[in-house]
Image 1 (cartoon, rainbow, N blue to C red):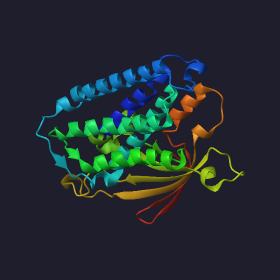
Image 2 (cartoon, rainbow, N blue to C red; image 1 turned 60 degrees about the vertical axis):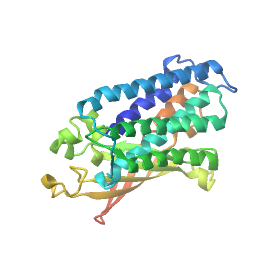
Image 3 (cartoon, rainbow, N blue to C red; image 1 turned 135 degrees about the horizontal axis):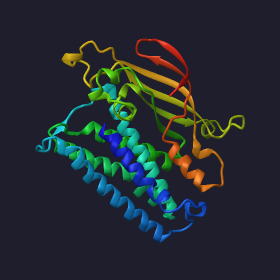
Image 4 (cartoon, rainbow, N blue to C red; image 1 turned 180 degrees about the vertical axis):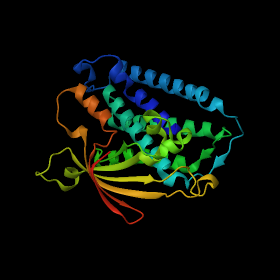
Length: 301
């Protein structure tokens, strides 16, 4: 759950310089060449916010649990890997938004990729190290691998295509499981959004025209492939108090919208669209689960 909290904090870091200083369209327009004042403002804002976030997590989250010597854990089998996808998602989105923020300063494309995309990976690595010194958790190599995959998904597409043809997105719906274990899965929508893996779905959203080069479909239309899980009251499938968990994996096929491909001259809208591209747009979806059941959702989110 901590990676979601850090993801939200870093979203503020990545987009904060764009929203906090002005709403004027010209201000939001990326610079054609290096703007040192913008660069300095972004560096100062991100360093300050990241430092504050790490200190805040240390005091507000880790302070409630005993410290320990540095240790590692193997949690690769928990939550049907939904938590690992959360790490991939967080690292990818933070890298994407970080690079877009660097683009606003006028730095070269190479520097956008190097410095922007590593924002999420660097921050999440620091959080993972903090886990390693906590008695409650531990440093997870599979978490680190997931963080690296998320950053690699962004950087790889920039190097291969010079654009993001495949977006990594998120959607959520409430489930009945949170009421059974509110202390673990969340009490109320705000907590459940962060904690209830049963209601989370992660999507690979691929732009159709980028691959098929067709004139018959709108340029912003994407084909989305989703993964989710259900029936989980604990991370472990054989927890003694919850031995009868009916855990299943779910695979989805749906449509989506790439907001960055909607043409507009408004840099205010472009900035809003950039943030909206974190969320999978609700559409009809076809679900296949590991029980072999095929189900049609007329409106899935």
